[in-house]
Structures are given as structure tokens and as C-alpha cells.
Image (cartoon, rainbow, N blue to C red):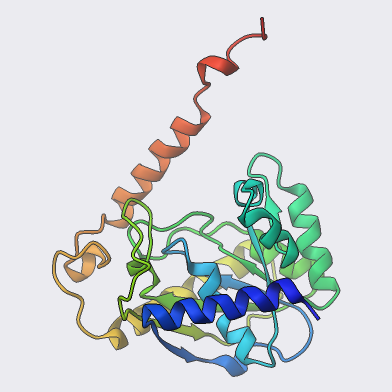
Length: 254
């Protein structure tokens, strides 16, 4: 029994019902009924981790332990919930501990959720992947479960206000065939990127109309989202800004 995770799932489902969200989930059978799996998810919005666990829940009410940035765990409200659900805090400056915890979870037969892009894709296209998902799959001898979503960026994404009211937004979620941990991390990562990129195109084609000029529509489909190259420049600028020392951090304390 996991009272915290169970309570959060119930609350989330009530919220989705109030929002009028319309989920279409496919490929649930690709989630293993038992045993470990690295659930690799594309990242377009802040609510992605809440939606990405749906296929596992439909597959025998399995729970996913997501890797999330440490700042979420530092929040006085979200922190206790995240720890209660046994999610994994990630310190971007020192990730060895979180990696070890994720591998330990996998070796114990858990599902671990990761976002290989590391940050939200402002272009809503698939960004370059980090190799962490492949490395932990190899270390734990666990399959990678590619999971792709489309539509979640309409709820709340980087640079745009949240829309948590009754929007009736359609969200597609599809789980691809598992990728076995065979080969080197770079080759596995390249295969994962290819599989998820192709699935994203399928979901976009199946989604219906993408209105021209809308913030949530990729530039390739006529939307106002930045191109992948433009988004990468924005991400690089953000990273440089975070790395810049603040006045309080310069020199020894007086």
C-alpha cells in the first residue's frame, strides 16, 4: 500500500476530470506487467510527469518513480508529496547519488521515469538526448520503455501561463515497444531518439488541426513556437545565466 501515491493519483484524476482533459492512450501492453523498466518520456510541459504515469497505472496499477530536479523536493508543499511517492531528486551539479538511486530502484523491479532531453523542449520537437537512460538500463539490465506525449504543452509550458481551468484539451500518449539494453550507451540513445521522434510525428499527424500561429504548435507545422535551433539558443542562454555568479556568491563572506 502506498497511501501518498494513491491519494495523489486520485486527486490528479479529479483535476483532469474538472479540466475536461481528453486522453487517448495506446501501447499500454508495452509496459512490462512486472519487473524493471526505464520509462523514457519526451518533455514539452511542466505537467508531463503526471500524465506519463498513466500507461503504467493502466497496466496493473503500476507506479513510476520519476527523476525530478531537486528544487521540486525543496518546495514545502511538493517536497513531502514527491518523497512520499518515492520519486528521485536530481541535483544537476552532482547527479551521481540520484543515478545510483535510480539503478537501485530498477534492480528491485521498479519502473523509473526519466526525461532524456533533460529540460522542456520549447520547440516541442524532440531535442538531443542525454545518455543517462541508456546507461542506467545497461547497469540494471532493464528495458527502456519509450513513451511519447502530444498536447500536454497546451496546459502549462515554459514561457507561457498555466491553463488549469476547464480547457478540454486532448492529450495523446503512446508507449513504443521496449528497447533492450544491448550495445553501447550512445547506440542505444540514438535508437531511442529515432523511435521517439518517429512516434511524435505519428501522434502529431493523428492529433488533428494545428492552428497556425498558436504558441503550442511547432514552427514546422505553422505555429509560433521557436524552431529547434532557436530553442537550443534560448536554452544555452538560460544555462549561461544560471552559471553566472551572483553578487552574494563572489568572494568570501564578510
